[in-house]
Length: 165
Picture 1: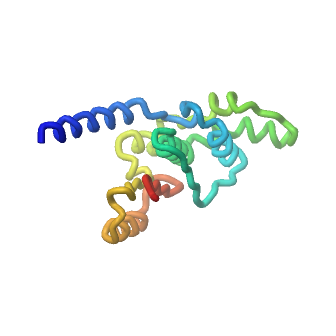
Picture 2 (picture 1 turned 90 degrees about the vertical axis):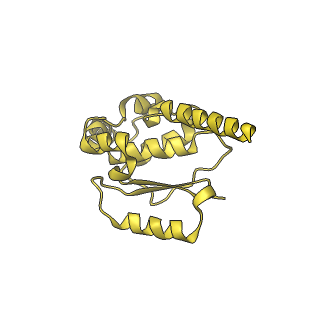
């Protein structure tokens, strides 16, 4: 019994640690440059995919990347941030914009209603997370369907289904 209690406490501390140091923007995501580039380009060219599958080993940043993308996607000031890049591309379609420049400049503002709401409670900002590993029952899916119906303050609804195998 004591071992299980210690294990639970350790897991809770690790979970808190992970959330505290979770990337706040796509530019903060480390080791996933190809994924980040695709996501930033989808924002830049306004070609938002209707679904994404991020797969890989545990601890590689799949959920963190999804959350950072959701926040950036729904930031109300993101269009103003993207405007100079879009203008450069329209003037010269062969313009080469580095990934580092995109990661450095395209970030959520953290000032608009959506960003503030996301920082406090992501569900209010249109981001719904479901842990399919532990909540994969029919009732949870019904609950998810119900949540998706409600309007939010954000432009896009994002559903992150974690641990789906």
